[in-house]
Image (cartoon, rainbow, N blue to C red; front, side, top):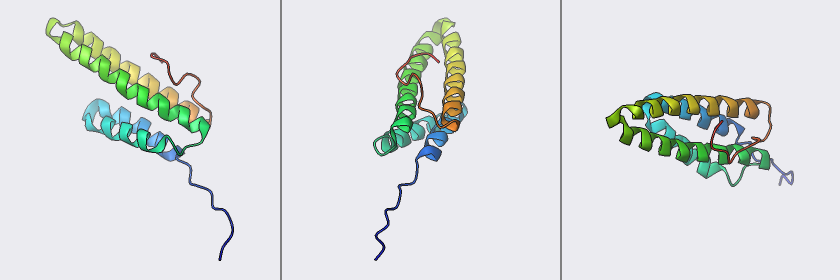
Length: 116
């Protein structure tokens, strides 16, 4: 009988995968939904510094969905295309910055922010 305590594997790789799925979602769409489901599933058992990334990812999904909805509705009057372009740039910046903090094994400094 082994009495040693086994450490739970870190969900750090999963957090990075969520960022990658969000980036792929710009082209494929559905991968963003897969990413947010993974973030919701893993957020409770992650260490505190990693929970900030999952919170950031979940907010990125929902805020991005709002930007996309507004852009889609306004695309009829053409300004919506600028909103959608803003969403693409916004998502890329958020994912890259999130991966930067994740690679440094740091908590995200502002997981509840709306911008970058």
